[in-house]
Image 1 (tube, helix red, strand yellow):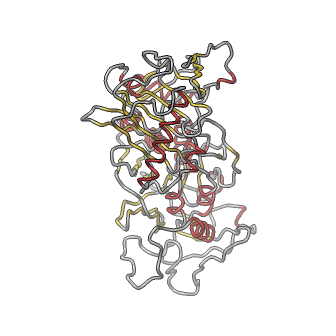
Image 2 (cartoon, rainbow, N blue to C red; image 1 turned 180 degrees about the vertical axis):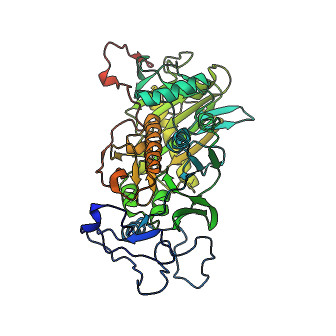
Image 3 (tube, one colour; image 1 turned 90 degrees about the vertical axis):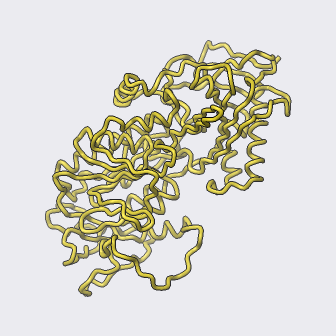
Length: 500
């Protein structure tokens, strides 16, 4: 370990004796002691080479083709991932930060994009890797069917603003014409057609042409940000003082620090053998809900039991129906139109998502039909319609968000490991809202920039969130909307009944 690292932990029981390599003087390895430890795969310090140790192999060299033990076709189990994560060595970078450092950001959702944006504000270059085929955004998803034309926000529906930093960002989006206030009525819809509208305050915002175009436009005025998509980063390997990223053994670049801006099983597997056991442990503690999204286009406006010409709302949180938690009219919301096809987004409850969860990459046809039927029946119940009276949609698309929203949180803006020069950002660190995601990205960008300005010390002075405890997270099934009160908190607001 570099003696310049004045870290009190080095003399405590937290660390084993660090290992050094004459081949790679800028890297040290130490082993964190955990409860019920699994013996790490140590290397022999007597050998002239540290082959097999962290940072011992050049990531660009060809892997051995010798026979290996059979591995399951469908990836690593959660149990084996946890075992690997807890037994891996902690990487410790000691190489000085260069004058022009570059950060690799894995994930192009709101938190990853704002992290890149604010790193540029501090003069730091970055590359954003995202798996999106159609565009950036993660859960800021919009589906457009050009030949119909049809449009659906099929993930994030809208957002609110309470934090001054986020307000500055949103003000800029308003000036650039990227977002606008959603003036349509939203509220809570009780089973049977009992609707209570929310007050107009706080303002609710949406992307002008949907959420995905907003995400694609966030970096349009940047000069220090590179975007690579679609790209599924499958390996992180520390080598000679930098992080080497690759996609199925194809090199993606070298970086002085990395940011994990996504979550779920893919993030857990990526971190399982990365040399970042503390970050991996925190990521694995995250629990996520599953939500079904049904996109449905109807020839005519949805009816009510009163035979009204149109529903008195554009969006509603549904109560008392297990299969549906939210419904929104995209035609009115995004196109401000009453004519033409009526494009609706319906979301299930988290309970329904859990009960009907299947591998989201290959949804069985029988499950898809069962879920679609149950959700459309739920819409009928919510509107107070008789069974099978709802018109049949001429277009439907069903999607399972298998890792939809967090159900627990450490309540911190970001996580950063200065020894491994790696951090995590995401809405789940603070809550489950677009605002939380943006604030997390901003916080991590500032943390990394401050760390770089100090030369990249290996002191734990810059460590954030590596040991914080988690607590349950409350909110709607489709996320949190800071400042938006529930019906229980609203007084003197008349209810509308859609049934006789």
